[in-house]
Length: 286
Image 1 (cartoon, rainbow, N blue to C red):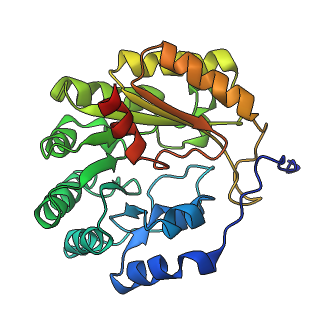
Image 2: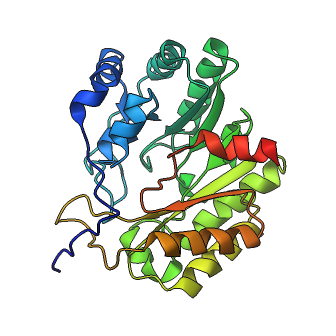
Image 3: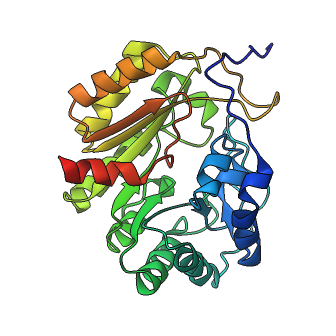
């Protein structure tokens, strides 16, 4: 399919020289970021503010999603020293809020849950004042691994549904009901836990389909939502079907808030980890 030209509101530039210091820190500590692995267009903005979303459990994913640029090769075993290095990065950067995520690791019996637990434990020991947000895969829908993660009390627990059920072919290996089940189970296990999800738009979804997903998320107890424009990482990935206007994003935000979300970020460059600290700050103000 022919790639359609990006509109004027989607011309953000990546300037590698503007975040060399952050790149050096990540390199020195042998850490990965989803910012770099997923070719995030916000990398210059976030890195220049010394903010990043750390990618634990390697850079290889066991799923074959057609929209994602994360590597699809056989993953390596978890690195037992990685949690300590993430904690050191948090201390060096003086982060108030941190997002930690990972590729899907269907090769691990617990989906990587124990590694998440070790990472949160290390961060809390090194920087007790830092709020921790986890963006987790679906863990195969298993209760025990999710209970392990919920048990270390992250400040926010996120799991992205990504798109509407009709378009789930782009999430090969994932299931809409399973993803909703992860969020619902997290809410059941810890009703006070703030859960979060993210949706990409511009893949051919209809507005009523998107709002139906928002309604399902609220039924699953989800408090926070991000809605952003899908941008194909390359010509080999799922193509963009439509560029959503800023005005439409504002409308989506209003309609989602009307459903009862505590905070919604909706805009062309919104990603699930973008401006992540604002979700908790907004909740405190209200």
